[in-house]
Length: 99
Image (cartoon, rainbow, N blue to C red; front, side, top):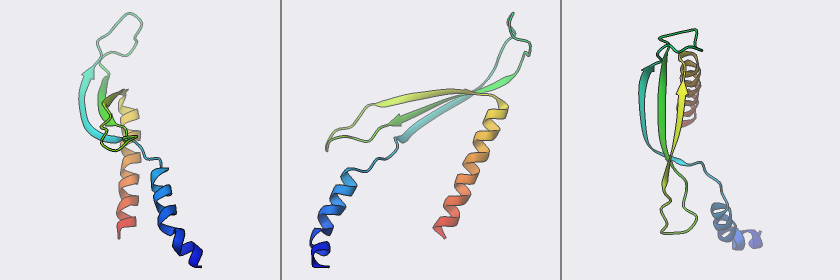
């Protein structure tokens, strides 16, 4: 038991240093776009959402601030509904875990 307690702080530091975490969301922008008809498109006037998420990866070294990158997506109404449904489930699970 003494060995475990003696090495506990070292193990915690090693676990924290080796942990992987997702990029942080630092900004977002969106707009609704209506596609005009073209020769190859059968459905005209279908609205889509253009979503731009600005994310920043975690720093590899202390004092370093990685550059933010932009992730863009174009979502149809059905895809947006699916995304929002999933986000609502995540919100509900987080709320349940916080109680």
